[in-house]
Image 1: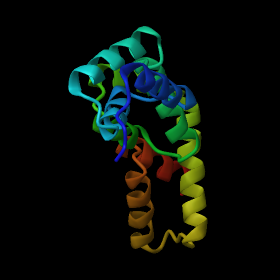
Image 2: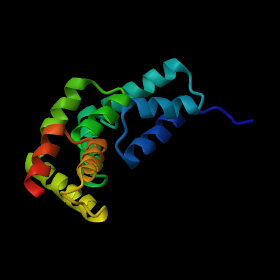
Image 3: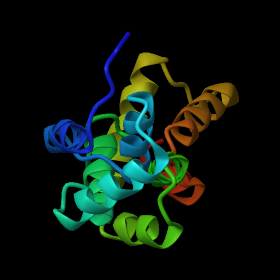
Image 4: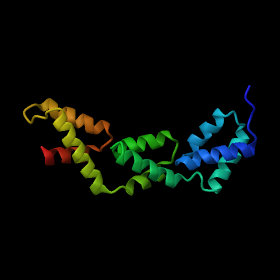
Length: 155
């Protein structure tokens, strides 16, 4: 049988967990719950972590947006949805998404479209290939207006 953690031990462990990479409140809450920590203790620990800046909503959102956009090539729609799933407020999400560089956003969309078109042997004569490319970019979370503009520009 596992021994339960004291509040100070839990604080030390969860602080290390937060220091390793940016975490949102929901992730920290889930981790503490998995350690069978009492509800009131969880609330106290989260408050301490926020006061000591281990948990910072704005910093987490910016880190998440940069990671998903630069590494996974996600669009704004998919990023917004993923952040909502983490229980973050829409206002903070919108503010973070507005800070994204539109020029690099469009450039990434064009590169993705070109790569996908090359991999599927895109043909202007085949209307299905345009549909397939459009759906691919839409599933990546890019806005319809940007996709249409990009496809007109490239093909």
